[in-house]
Length: 383
Image 1 (cartoon, rainbow, N blue to C red):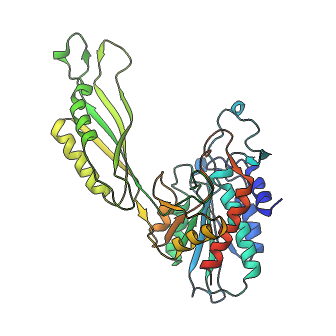
Image 2: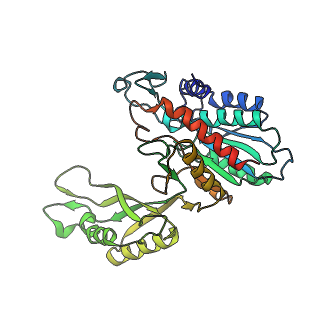
Image 3: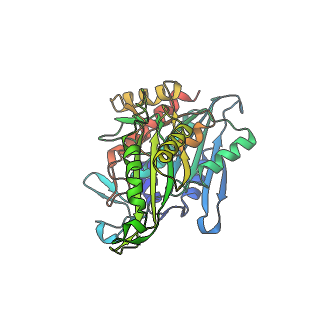
């Protein structure tokens, strides 16, 4: 049984439902210290949402002179849901049919285990390199993300620590390991809209003002708008209405207020400012009484062809025999925080078909292969 698989099983047994780390960081820290890393545990957030973060760095033989490659990931997992729907205990890793089952095996404890074992092997064989290797791990990625990687980035800014290359272990593969990597992510922009009306009896509509009826033309205009046509790297921006509520449930009452939630996932063809101004302009054409509150979750980021993307692509080709597709699809990731530091950011990990699902699994063979790919990336980037 591979060292990566052993470590993965240890991590899965720790019930690290976000934001709880459940000792994952301590286990990883012990191994990294033995491998020559300087490690620091950074706790953040209120007692009700206590987050554990790990920053670890093994400097090159010439101190700060070289580049820094950071492995980035999260130890927290989503809740398992109804236990009776799982074939086996989600926190007791189970091998069957060539797969390893358990909560978080794919998202993303397999990548973390592979990171650690690949780095251990690399530093044991490469004693003279000017570049540095680092780890940035958090227990606040599946949650709000307000006290996780962003806090570590803030600390690194304060001490003047640069990150040049950032490899995130998110489960990016789709049909098989190595078929897809992420070289960017879309931004996320949300809003809560309240449309005011006048409550009244449905039999006397002239004495009321139905906000649902009033909003209908505005909704049609919003859904008909072409926000942008996308570009080489990002698909066209789309607006989605995720929630809508009005009324008390009574069938004979015209509601006095309509509340809805909307979201944009957008690429570099638009900006948050351009989208907010265009939405407000459309609403003003159709409504006279409304409130609109924006929440900006993430800016889009993109890593074009460069040293990191070349290394990841070449390593996948060498170890697996595939040429991966570069994609910017999916939700946000913690890579967005590293991109603000000017780092090249690429995400690569196991297939994502079962993440957040009952009976989450990874193929046993992929666990070892993933370690080999990460090791090959180290060989290509760290001099």
